Length: 191
Image (cartoon, rainbow, N blue to C red; front, side, top):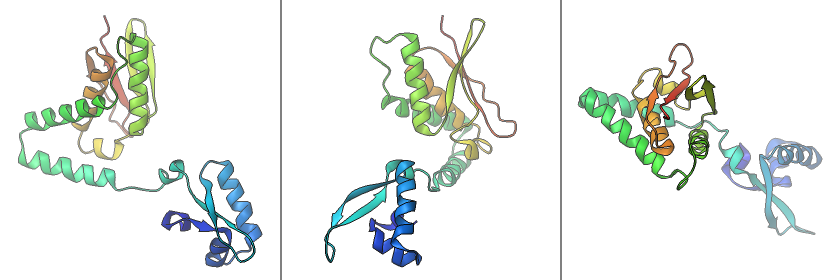
């Protein structure tokens, strides 16, 4: 949390936490090994320069954010002011906008496009995989990136459906499992 506020030296951390500098170095070494903290420079010290430490991008993603709370409120407001049809159109447009940043590989094979869709879902916070059952192809994830919102507003799945369809370039049908913790399921109609 101290490094979330700003970068710090070992001595600054030790002073704030009432620890020895050796104890802090040991913790920083472990956090560095785990890819959560990194040395990002030096600052002038009394006798010699002191290393300055900060969080990595991976560490910043571990802290809670209020995105789902705001998204939940936003969808509630949209649903209270607009017709269900318009809300779905908005969700699909949002999905296409998300996919626009993840343009499918030009001339890419179906496999390449499916992998591009998996990468896009991962960037959103999911952990999806390609599943083949006979001649049926789908993208599935047991960790919905929008689980907290989807439980109350299943329309949000349509945004992801549109993003996947845009990237894969084939018809996609959302068949998400919303019993218990929501699970993403997208059926691909690749002829």
